[in-house]
Image (cartoon, rainbow, N blue to C red; front, side, top):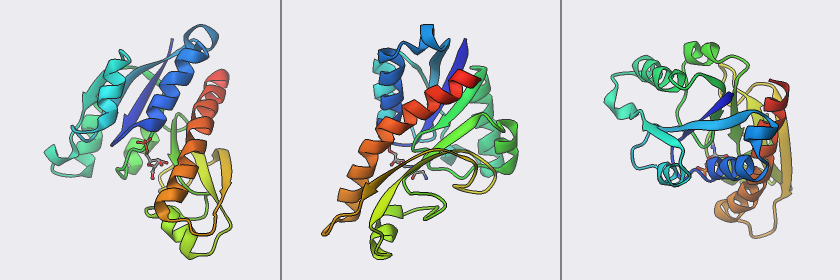
Length: 193
Ligand code: GAR
């Protein structure tokens, strides 16, 4: 069985989209894959409840309980590796990872970022796209490398930036595309794994 471990920090709507796709498209029988666990760095992440309700194992590795990035990453790695993951999926996981952590999962860790990379890596992507006068915005799924929000692109989707858009209205338009392309990109990755 190909085990997927999803890391979240908040709402987990992308995680939920992946769980729904796995169920609807019968990933277990078709791809020999299942979501083995959902892990959050925040104990209050709403997505933990969603995952538990779906019968998925959950865990919390609270970054505040560790003295530094290396210590946190080591604990996170332990919590992930218990599940012998084929693929690690960052889904709104808002922590910068150490190069050592990324190297451990090289080629088998993916992220979703709410911009058309390489434009607007980092935070506040929607406001920055509006401020730059972009007519198109979007979302990127990519393999994770040591450099933040870089790495080979697996999938992208574009949406228009409309007159009067705020960061919130644009974020909602982008998010609806995220929910379509992330499960698809994960399924495609699993097909060749
Ligand atoms: C999503 O928009 C995701 O692209 C973004 O956080 C949101 C999480 O929503 N990720 C990043 O900004 C990573 N740099 P979700 O918890 O509902 O999936």
